[in-house]
Image (cartoon, helix red, strand yellow):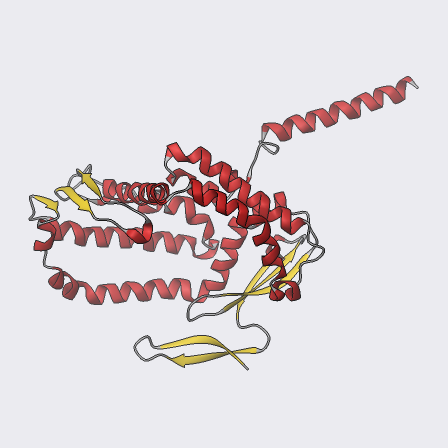
Length: 329
């Protein structure tokens, strides 16, 4: 009897140790905002708004997964019928309506402005060697951004060594979205393009005392375009050569990085076996989701193609060349 009690106490102690270890590693403390994709972009959210943004994002994700987890089944038929989206919208819309009052155009503009300016300054600090910048940025209604002054003094001097742009935001936070087999190539191309085009910018403004809303119009943009048009076309082809043949793997990598962590932690509904289209211009893709799955690589499969009842056709668009499109049969 005493032996049984000792064994029970040992089991309880072991459970407590396991729970403490899980707590130490944050298993119980993690929220959706502690996982990608929010985790990867949270550094770019205005600090005064970050706490509320995190809380609101968590509410949205919890609501969506609550609906998914209470579905009797998730199939192509249910997806195509629109029932699943109707169920999600029924629960989500009241929350979004509440948030739309909270996040006024002014607040949304602040979020977008901070995110953009943060990245612009990071790149300027690393690459820009030109004169002081004193620009009055006009209203940008499409982004809810109101007019504001942008003031900047170069931190880097001509001849100073810059660090690799791929080690800076946003690339360093988003690099995990890129398939491993092309990650190094993409990073190298990204570094190369930043050096090249900031070199063009630095050369274009070298004769100005400062960059302001008047002096910026004195730059001979036509000459710069004529001088670099072939270079730009060549660089676009380089990008296409890397990403074109790997678009399916890129989509899969993005899903694994951003969707799978949320599914692993918050999804407890019926098994998912669906096929959905991914609207990639000129290169239609089909995404199959099979979850749960013991093999992580088989949860998402992506390949070029169209849904049943459609066929892939190559269409000549004229000025944009040949592209692939899905057409109903």
